[in-house]
Length: 275
Image: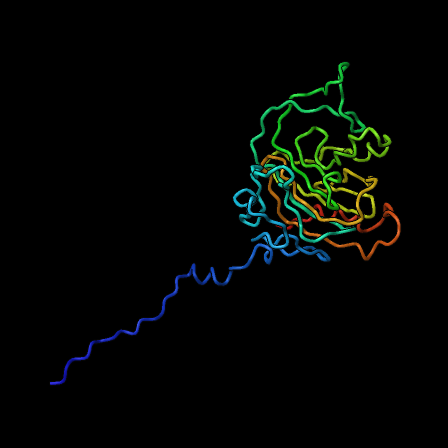
């Protein structure tokens, strides 16, 4: 009697539904959130490709869920940089950047500023302070240097000021005043904000959450080109949706007029929901 052959059941290949969905939807945050027309992504949503990232940044500057997050605790020796710089340099551009200060605000004494941006001092020359909620401080460096920094902070004047310029006593009052935000357009602490920064020649326009807060402010002696940087000021900060439109080939003349589309459409771009 021939030996009985084992019965083999041909079971269908079953692949869990979540695996199928994962294969179908495994795309990068950048692919799900493409740049606006004419812009390129500076951040791919998953890595620090295109950014200078020394070993000391590991664990402090991190990427999670399509966001660049900094805990403010990068340890750097004297002369070393704690800020996150792009590898490329830029001249004239429009930069779109979302940011937020995620820390719980605490009351802290901070400087008082005059309407034209100077630190107010008492009769002894000491800086006057006011007690206010403080959730952190950061910024975005333009053209490769910290002096041309668009500020992110907790001051009543709001974010977007060009701090080193409006505090400079050597500059005329009209230049200093133009570097102070015309209004506080920040959202409540912990919420996402959007900058649209237009840099043409030595003039900068800044739209914050759809409101123009800096309008063609002049930045004397700003370099013609330079890298961009996300500032580590020692406080937690987060960035996402970093998109840039290069204008270097489009503006060979003077400063933009008030109707110039590259400067004027900042409020339109700033109000567009990307995600």
